[in-house]
Image 1 (cartoon, rainbow, N blue to C red):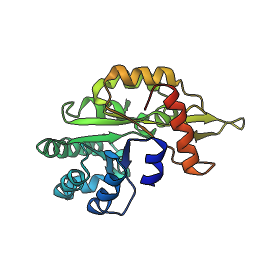
Image 2 (image 1 turned 90 degrees about the vertical axis):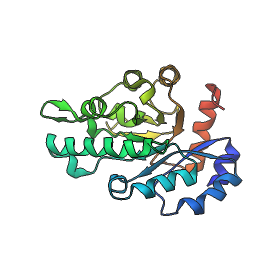
Image 3 (image 1 turned 135 degrees about the vertical axis):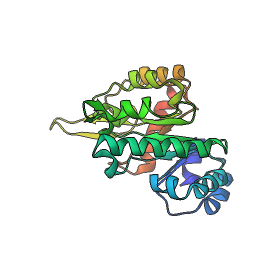
Image 4 (image 1 turned 30 degrees about the horizontal axis):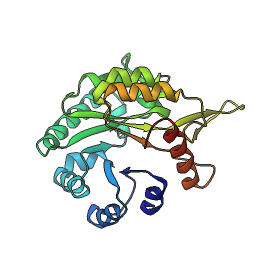
Length: 230
């Protein structure tokens, strides 16, 4: 995988969803001239194994330590959400002492309401802006009824990384994930918002592909290259 994405022209990667340990991956990542800028680990790892999170990310040379999603138990009440937010703030403080940042990755459910408020509003307002950042996913923002451009602008530099992921509507009223530029998102406006917000990284992500995933990655790369990325 590293060999293929490097040959396409990609320079940065995210590491998530793998059982491999950092020490096993780092030599291969270095061999192909790639830089890990985001990782994802479960919330429980941040709470119960903070030393592991620090070692994992420092071994990979990664600054932004991501939580891929909020565990289901914390979505059930405002009190449970408060518990999750407190845990994130505590974990972020420990990471900050090691010159690392905690990043929360959104889906669409954060735009459900608990006691009349979006979960996301509380995640933004009640976490420390200096230590808790966001890994913004454009596809899930759109599915959550949000304008990705407005949300990126609202977060500003807290949108430390952005998952570029397109939304393709179908004639049967379903939607699917698509290669960048093959869906309905306004990429000129998203790219401008990404640049103006001061976000550090943009990463192509497509969970489901209807063709070979590497062909999809190539299509997204060529589209973004034409927009000035390299």
